[in-house]
Image (tube, rainbow, N blue to C red):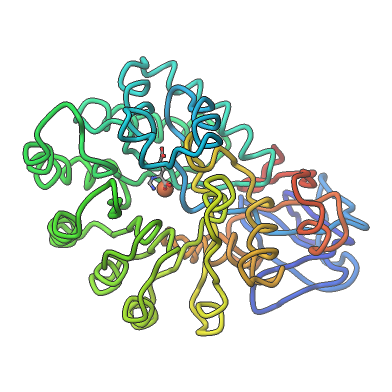
Amino acid sequence: MNQADLIIKNAHILTVSAQGEIANGCIIVKDKKIIDVFEGPLRNYESKKVIDAKGKLVLPGFVDCHTHLVHAGSRANELQYRLQGMSYQEIQQKGGGIYSSVKATRAADPEKLYQQSLERVKLCLKHGTTTAEIKTGYGLNPATEKKMLDVIHRLNIESDLETIATFLGPHVYPDDQEPEAYIDWLLNEGLELAKKDAEFVDIYCDVGAYTFEDTEKFLNAAKSKRIPLKIHSGQFEALGATGLAADLGAVSADHLDKVSEAEFDALLRAGTVPVFLPGCSYYLKTAYPDARPYLDANMPVALATDYNPGTCPSLSIPMMMSLAVMHMGFTPEEALKAVTRNAAKAINRDDCIGSLEKGKQADILICKIGKLDDLIAMFGGNFVGTVIKKGLLI
Ligand code: NIG
Ligand code: FE
């Protein structure tokens, strides 16, 4: 008999790997990793910790590959503005939107910023998210961008959520200094900071945010420093940044509500992960993009929450899956792959997380339901029962 640290038996497993669906099987965990996954009753292994998952669905931990989880303040007041007919851009022009979060985040002391973010991390874990990418971008100045990076790293060390830092210094142009001066900082010290403290850089290119020209400068400069690229593009208009990012070999291109045919082809050519963010369409009451052409072209389509205080204050990955299935042309299986394996690819982690297979990190969810369809159908509920991160029960 081989000794394991943890065994899950009698489980209905969706491996999201070549092994596919296992109607009744076992997962064996040792040293934080999955060492075996097989069909049928428990054999060859024993452990002091055995979970009987009879009647339960077992999934890989969810990967939320696009969030703005670290920020201070709330923007719940914007709900009323938008219900009165003000657009996201109009609210921003009046000093609300991203600028209101920047003000609060600049003013927050690091400990307070950490504690507020930690509450959100707990919500992530409760809803089955075991890894999350987190962006800066509510600083728009050197000190606050650094403060955000420090909080993202502290969360990774001190909480049960694995976090990945993305430098989004170019979120919007700051309103308290000349754009040229800030861009100069971004292209020099900003990118040095990103290279040291972040895994990716990102820029928001759209109406009300960075121009195509500034996006081109920033991405090229980041690429020459060999920092992996991400992009926020096509949320409101197709300004060309999706195609640009793909041509520069970006790891992912996110939002993609508006994408030209040429940009679609560029994504396909480059293998850039298209990341859809249905929570924004829901909360901004805009049309949902059709993901079917991307799925049919066999692109590694991902889904994320885009959690942020203004356009998607939700951290629920199952809710995003449900929206994607009901409104964007995903099958439940495609939605699951989009929040696990493909989301892991969107953060360059598909070698170690995103599926339940031998050698991968033991990030596992045991759900209080028997079938994937139930997770999609019972939208708004939380059916994640047990969360296992790196082999440990949380
Ligand atoms: O991904 N689109 C730009 N940035 C965020 C929203 C940030 C905010 O409104 O605070 C997004 O949707
Ligand atoms: Fe975003």
